[in-house]
Length: 418
Image (cartoon, rainbow, N blue to C red; front, side, top):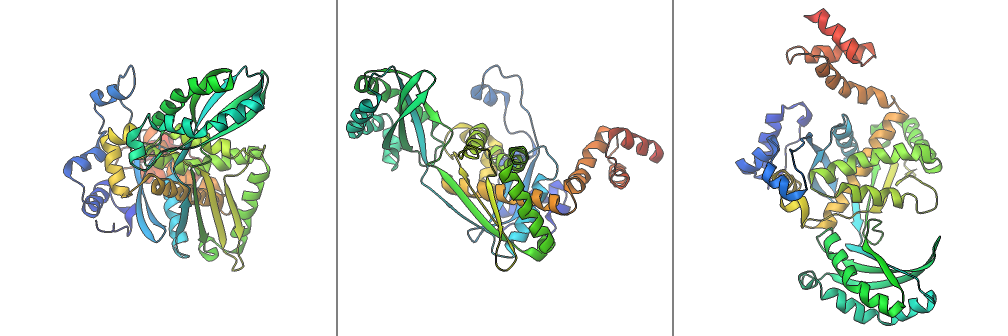
């Protein structure tokens, strides 16, 4: 595949962007059509969830300027909120000056939890279960020979005694290398198979046996250096570091700070058919691991005065199963991204989250979040107010100039123009 020509990409019409993407990513006409229209038929949707009555379309944008581990990526993002894609692109372009994003990841290991209750001797039960570790892992792997054949499968068993309102519980963590799958089905099947055996060993009662979305064994990490001059100078860098320190110390700020990170992460995940709820739950739980809800990112100033950002979070993603194999638009988006495995996908998603956070903090530390956001939001307001395609640009320009981006103001501007 050829590299996508991103010069003045944001100034092109949607059709011109599609033409460039089709040429660069060698998309077929059917793949191109899947981007222009909702590629999911009612029959396909009916096979995915229950009580289907329709489908919902949201915009898919392309994030450009992303250099990740010395390779250029074109990243689809599905989101309805203005300014998210633009901010990611802008920060990725600034990161390019210092070499782009650098990422790494752990093995794609998910955790299955088996809850054992009513155990008379929980600590002894823990030891008995661990003594049977090898046999239990073999039993787990019998449930998915295909995954084992690909080099994955159950790889370890951990046990802890947990104090609860109902007394001590023995909690088993089955660790499963899911390879390129997100892994929920495989992990849950293995946990179900182990439950009766663990029940016998512990001499207790098993209730829950299910995957955990706090995937701390499956971590994605990214960092980048953002040039101080390109950000706006030393004062902006200092302001961004202070914004991070505020978020890391105060959960009220951290909630909005991390929401901005997830704007980027969830947009890429949704465009690529991932379980956004699992990713979001894992991220927010991880942000609370110290006992206080904190920033998912870290920001600091290096000796050159540039801003250095890093992010580390659980990343339960997959390229096998679910919408990935069903939704035509998701398939096209994955082809545009051009990745080879789930770990690579997780790393890229983490890089986008870092870029998105940088964009939001820069806006907060300089002109304020509203200036950039509201200028993009003004177009939505103008359309809501009834602006025709012929005058919408003029309405947006006048609306932003007033500083009052509201439907009633837009309606008054439209009256004056027509």
